[in-house]
Amino acid sequence: MTTWTAPAAQRKDEPFTGPEREMLQGWLDWHRQTLLTKCAGLTAEQLKTASVEPSNLTLLGLVRHMTEVERIWFVVRAAGLTPPGPLYNTEDNRDGDFDDVADADAEANLAAYHAELPAADRAVADLPLDHEFTTHRGDRMTLRWVYLHMIEEYARHNGHADLLRERIDGVTGD
Image 1 (cartoon, rainbow, N blue to C red):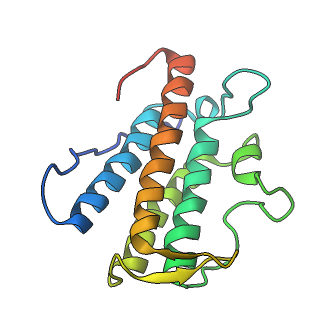
Image 2 (image 1 turned 180 degrees about the vertical axis):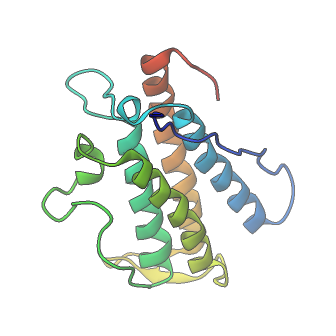
């Protein structure tokens, strides 16, 4: 029997020049693939390995969180679409995407992440960066803000992923 491992990521360099939308999308894609690079080659159990107490942060938790964040910001808030139900048990536990990984199916969770990325991109593909929407708290925001926020969110969590990966098997890098 073969043990499942997270597949290799296909990261390409972010753009150095070009129109604003392509640069934002390029940086977002680079960060998306960076997270997958941190997971590549690890088993399900390794992806569920927490950092150090008292933190329960895991690479799988980060992937699950970013899957939900992609859906919430691009599909639900910016595009105003209603996808089917929550991805993880966040109704009983607001942080279920991070917390409830012990019995999670890592292969299915990574597949959900891979499916959510093109869905998020499609949801906003025809919207201009100046597209405005109102959040659940009543704030007015633009799609441009969402791109910048997502790049920042990935950058922060990819820093966490660096440390988690190094703890698991010593691998470091960007």
